[in-house]
Image 1 (tube, rainbow, N blue to C red):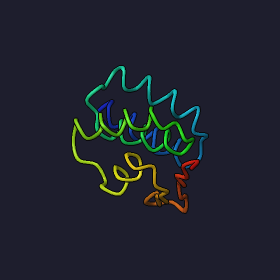
Image 2: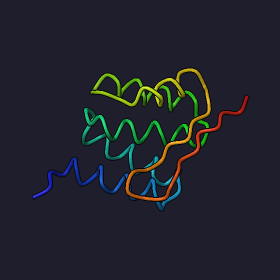
Image 3: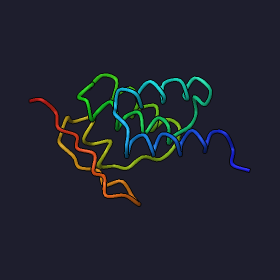
Image 4: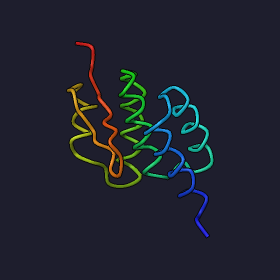
Length: 102
């Protein structure tokens, strides 16, 4: 049996690969209401918010991810310093591009 928190993580990563960011943001926000200490959900939310250049929301999400566990240093630096980043999604050919409007 898969814990529900992990099921939400799995749906979030599938949405990250094939879905659109705005729908996944809504999904993640709802999932975090149920699992507010889930590090992976916060990290995925930070990625999605950064992917659509929502700086304040991405920063809040990455800080919550940091508060609840470990995070990729490159992602943290990209969001906090508004630097571009490409994130390959393991197990797929998808690359999430974070490009900040400067």
